[in-house]
Length: 231
Image (cartoon, rainbow, N blue to C red; front, side, top):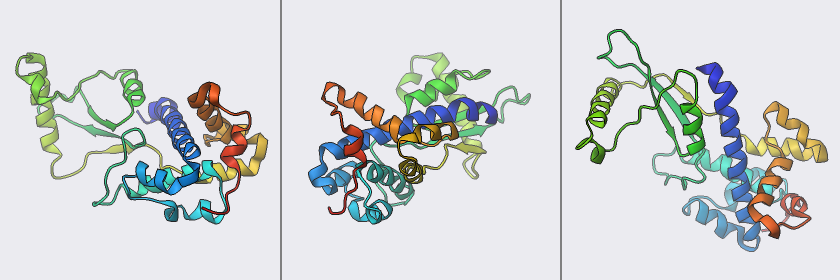
């Protein structure tokens, strides 16, 4: 499973990270005259420009600020008092591996996948020897014997792990800020960094251009990376 995750899951997750970064950068670009308000809106009022210490100290452009915002936000949401990020920005992904105490032959390992990304669900469902076995909603159980059976098995599986956590694999930690600082240093040659799983400026700019369609300006990259010395 670890090899499958390395080969298929994390590249899929990286693509989602690029798309999410592009979405934040595009939103900041459209609201460049009041970036504080944009960040507050995206974080439910929890984060603002003062939280972007690295990018502001470096006079970083919109793209670097978007990257640091996502990095900081994904640390911040682990606080007990934090309001969760909008699902479109939440890149967390955890696979928890559990046994069924009622399955004496250990024929199955149950994997509880926690993610906001449909692409990750599709990817996991496509792995070899993996079968979809979703936890049914309470409303589905009443008139569906198969759903009722799944509900019974999942209840038994989850009950076992109430007092301790099952083995888990988490998506890689976000380090978008460091990736983009490295990409900025590489200039127009940053494409080569993608082979090292780094997020590059070129691919994020391309994703922003896709979002903007015909309205994308010719100098989009320049607008996204242009230094900002004041707020």
